[in-house]
Length: 214
Length: 214
Image 1 (tube, rainbow over the protein chains, first blue to last red):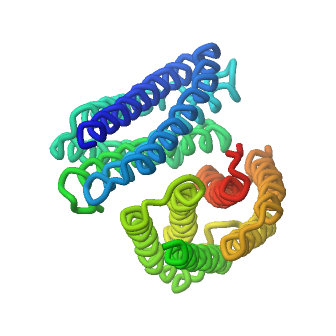
Image 2: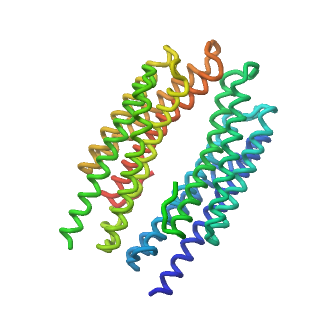
């Protein structure tokens, strides 16, 4: 029974790793769509979000199977419930990548982001990418230290969002309200993506230490 | 055992109803803070969000207790997992009310919303309030019909958000980028609040019919 349970958990974490890889690829492609006004890339992100949602359902199904067949208690139960939370965060990260892609589609063939905002979005996307990579890593091999690094990255993301708003709200902003709104919403999508990565990391920490974080 | 399980489920749904009432009160007060630039109301929303988060943890604890002690299967298990999803949606609705309150605090003593946007925000808040009321109702007494009404309300919310953007993006928008960005983000907070209410309703439908929705 114990061995079987461990095998189930391994299968569950394999699904979560696949989800995390998927939402990482989604945000990379969405950023590329955004910065290069690449319509095909944007459409691919929207299409592929269906696969991420499908994985989310698979995780939920698997969690229910495990609970029903193995009746886990204590830390075993905590592990499967954590998997459910993590998959919900990852699913939302996929949605946020899709929002970025849809913003660039809405403005296509014009770029959604004017030239002087591209550097800050490039930096935000690099932080998002490192965070998705880290979350993939800690899901494959749980580590408190790895999960905590996500919070440091999240602070960098918050600083970048503040820098973005400073540009959007400067007195000599030349692009009008629509571009300012798109910029603010896009900034929020990256920042929320980072928040969900942090939440997933907190679930990993909770799982390892038994102490709820945050 | 069966009777005990039913009692546990009743206790769980009582917690969810309390959460739903809490997030309804939070958005009412946050809207009042927003439309009247009422600092005390806004601060109360921020303070009280802690209670909603605490209820969320209680639901999770309760779900784990039930699974560990009762080892539910099939539709019983589905019910407790649905409770977990619903509480996550409600917790997020509380956060969104808090975001509205914080936006009005950030602009205090100026109003965050100029006079001509107040009617649309008033309408959005009325839809949000009806949705929170409906979700409270279907949690107290599960009903597919009641849960489905949430989708009709959500369509109204989406129309209102479009109307809001039309004003924000009109050529003669006189308030500059900051007020446009605040307006867009606030619109999004109400719209997301409605989305999470719909998600909760879908969980109720899933629970009753056994068919996943959406």
